[in-house]
Image (cartoon, rainbow, N blue to C red; front, top):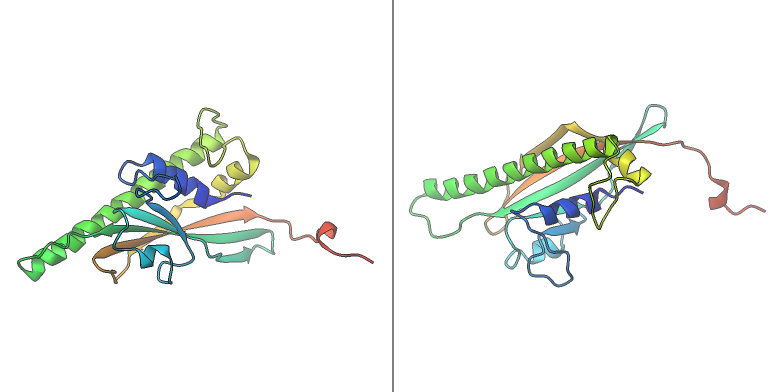
Length: 192
């Protein structure tokens, strides 16, 4: 099964502004899995100790059937978070400038991730065997098909109008189309 969260965590370890450390208990953990960004979770409870910038993948499943149940459309949501400079500002204008700088930083990270995903998708389509990751393999059929289904050309993102204690948040939404045969698998049922 294709897991976009594993692909994203791999990117977070490679991407210098995040430099995510996967080790348990690491103080440089910058990638998180959350149900939703606005629910009680590790990220929201620990804003005061998180490294900035960081990112979170929403693990809730948002899907719908398409084309006479032959395809499933999944909606993946990724959040980028940057703590704005909260040093005392001389005027409201300079405070808004600090918030704006943080928002533009999240926008840049979104664009960097999309460029990397476009490149990774191309490598998977071309059968590239030189790319290695401890979290996934481009030689895995499910990974190749999962990457192929990402609709990166229609990705959309926006900064959120709220911020938590000086954190600016940008949400990225990516659709993934997955072919699916809606057939009954007899092995999953009890028969008499």
